[in-house]
Length: 141
Ligand code: 5GP
Image 1 (cartoon, helix red, strand yellow):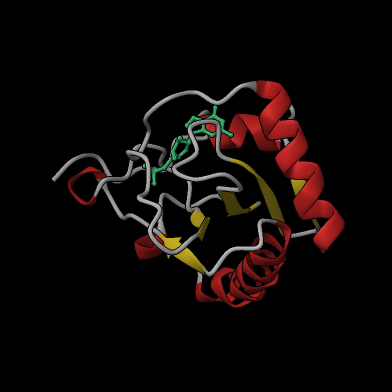
Image 2 (cartoon, protein in one colour):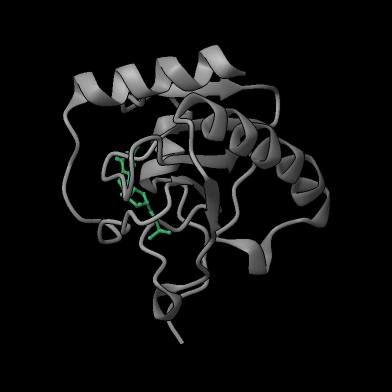
């Protein structure tokens, strides 16, 4: 088993501290949502709690109870913004399960019938495309 310590300097903690930029779609006292830089489909966004935990396994249940309604709200908005047929929600715990950033996050990915997902952590999307996709989701909120 790898180290189970929460690293305060992980990339999402840096986004929360404003040290690196992100295309934000939603923010409240407890939660932030922003576009994934390597989207598996147009509109792929991430929802994270402001309070740090590595993933679901070490998260405070109180954090989860405020986080999931936001995941729902953003799933509905992303479905509408991209006229999607469905929405895929994904959440990985530890490297063996595919986790690459160790701050709890839920992936929200609009899906269209017959369109395959791009690979997980594949290609970086153009900043202008991410900005426009973030705008569409904010508008649908
Ligand atoms: P995980 O594999 O941990 O479930 O997912 C981490 C996600 O974060 C990946 O989908 C990856 O594309 C995304 N990601 C990695 N680095 C950054 C970054 O600096 N900014 C943003 N917005 N997304 C990132």
